[in-house]
Amino acid sequence: MNKKGILSIIVIIILIVIGYYAFGSKSDVTVGNGVETPVVNVEVPDGVTKDTYAPVTKDSTDTSLIGRLKSASVGVSEDGSKVTLAGGKADFTVSGSSVKSSVLLGDIATTNTVGGRTDAIASLSVITGSTKTAYVVLFEDKAGTLSDKSYAMIGVNATVTGLRADELSSGGEYVVSVSYKDSKGNHTALLVVENGAFNLGKTVNF
Image (cartoon, rainbow, N blue to C red):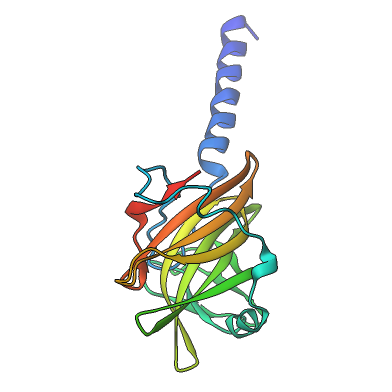
């Protein structure tokens, strides 16, 4: 084989490797409303600092709440499809796709009551092949029933290690502090809750 042919093969191999890391390592499965919004950096709101809302550990988890969440229903597709967890997990296939995935409840959850409404906040992972995508899910806890209301993607191959909720205003706005780790180390994400849902445009990542 001449040098030109060898060079062409090397270029093809490089393109395949780049394509794998750019596209193959990401999950094509989304949960909740189907909007896969990663944690981003924005201007930090007044009064919100990493020191104010320090990372927490799973030691603060409400174990009774975890038990209830293990049989909750969660969204797994933008078409509104849901699955009911059994023992905190469920397998599913996205409609119109052959992709088989699993959804797994994490071992971290907390609650917050504001304006007469009680919310439950929990960690959730979607596993597709070797890829695990971490989410934080907001449930409304009403009359003993947990209803999923909002989802925030934390990261691919990330693990949520702590959750806590702190009130920001008397109007019902509050912040969910999420500590998590990935291949780059430990991080903190602040998710602002307004009107019973995450305002992803106000997410702050440290």
